[in-house]
Length: 335
Image 1 (cartoon, rainbow, N blue to C red):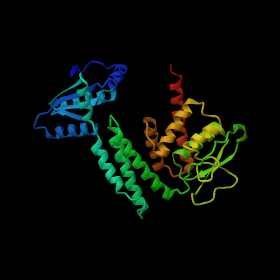
Image 2 (cartoon, rainbow, N blue to C red):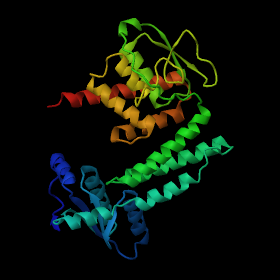
Image 3 (cartoon, one colour):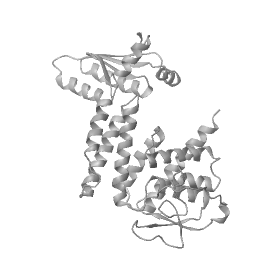
């Protein structure tokens, strides 16, 4: 392998290319044996960052600007504590070496442990609140492992799929009426015919319902009013229903409600909305993930834990979706 000095390649563009090319950062450190406290603190910090151990005193991370800043900061602290530390850039010079480096970051054992714990959680457990607490704990643990899974593969996908299935089963006990996909063609409609309407869906908003309500108010009916009904109740007859069993707008074929609304009102030509639709689809179906979807889910879960009022949840969630739409739109405009 080739080693570059620590001061080189600080340009963000170059660093991005380095990461894509399979470059790595190495922190080479040593601490006086008498300083056990600082040694343990450094080790715990490196472990929390997902560093791989190349050999005693040499720790690896894939090259990125954030990783370089973190390692450089820690190396400064080590030197201030009386130790020695340098951050180097390492270039694997043969394919087998790159493969060996990647293997050091394998998270299969962590995912296997999570899968085992998920399998032991019974969706029919009588104490639903206790069950939900355990499921949230598994989601937190998954997020922690995924955050340091720099080379995700089948193990991560399978674990997330099983976790989403469990979450949906538990959520269904709190929120019956989850729509089943219906067959047939999507109805093509005119936006002008759906102005200043009353819309309704199940309360305790989840991703598809929140995103669909945002889409309705932002792109279809800017005078829309919403009624959130308890899942076991009958929805108000005078309102236009979405995302529940028997609603006018719901899952069609392989499309979730958000996607069906896009198609019905001719909004699929909007590239930014298509990207949001993909994000919503992944989160609602559990068929995969993306960086954008994972980020939105983290924000959404935080809002759900903090906000109990669906009207307030829609207002705050709408601002976040507005930002996603703006960001995706700007990406499309870049040459």
